[in-house]
Length: 225
Length: 110
Image 1 (cartoon, chains in turn cyan, purple):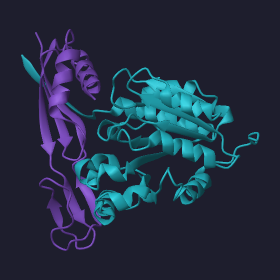
Image 2 (image 1 turned 90 degrees about the vertical axis):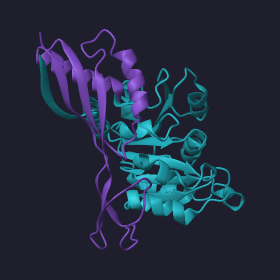
Image 3 (image 1 turned 120 degrees about the vertical axis):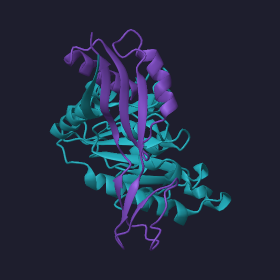
Image 4 (image 1 turned 90 degrees about the horizontal axis):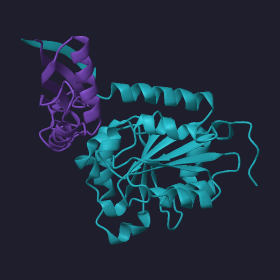
């Protein structure tokens, strides 16, 4: 016989629970964690590298790099800057989830860090639904992607703390209506902080670094030379 | 996403001593990022050999409902995100449209 069973449960309930434990782990260790989401080619890795080079010496960073394939290109670049980086190969999955981040956090020496940057898989759809347990969620949009993204992928802009608009040096060459773009963002997320930057010219980074530094907890760590 | 649906359905079947899950009813908001076809595609693969094999997925799409904070107008999004149709304000509250739920399932008991 057929029977109806009521469930009414969030599909991603179990991810949410592990995200909460990641968040607690970061909090216990006095670490500010950031989930960086974006389309492929928006300049996530360049943005991370530029940020690493500009942070004050009191900030000790660990980076988690998510990729769908078993490559270590991004992690190698970060390691070359002297920053510990862990690569996650999602095995074809188009987003990171809280379990993958839980495992990656075990590979970082959290006692020595006060900032963890997580580079999500390049994708504007799936990462939106998966809380990783970070302190802040950010999206890097870039000028060549076009100004209609908030209208096409509304979900990713909800629950965001920061929006980086990268490649602003290309504004004179591309039809990008900044007011149309930011209007879409404001409809979805009125409290979001927006930082227009260019990784190429360095424009806008000062404001972003000031904001970021002011959010990173003080921790008694040796000062980098 | 699909794995989570499968896990929820299989566990509910087990807890209720059901042999087989025949139907799964999902509530999906218009603004949530989930594509019916890709869930169905993965479903057919990953549900094999589990109590949920062959279960039919039903997607109940919930429209995005907004409230204008300026004039208190309530409206639904037809397709694209848009400002308040009454006053043009972009100061909005999203009331529904972000759901991602397993609502209920139907099972067979011998």
